[in-house]
Amino acid sequence: MWPSPVVRLNRTVAVAMVAGPGAALAEIAALEQDGRLDGYHYLSATKADLLRRLGRHPEAADACQRTLDCSENATERAFLERRLTECRQYPTRDAGSGALDHGRRPRWPSTALLPGAGHPATDSAGTGGS
Image (cartoon, rainbow, N blue to C red; front, side, top):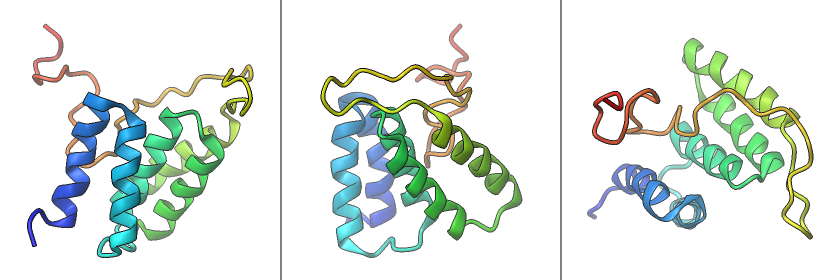
């Protein structure tokens, strides 16, 4: 069946860039329901990033923890451990007003672990912004 689930996951990165993280999160939900990417840590990593970008930090931390549970790569694990700590410390949005509680802003780029994401220092054309 085309597109494959991994291609669909990669497409969510583009959807997030064009239509925003909420639209991409809807695509993640469909992939989760499909089930063919169960245990694929880039699915939970993508979900964690989208949730974080929406200000849903407790859910982002849960998804980040699932990613850690599946990842065996030491470099990815170190990054994810830092991200998890920062997600747990980041302010949450007030459900009623949508306003952010005061807190420290994380230092990691929004697409740092998304499949197919370019280097954060480059623009969409990969030219480094120059």
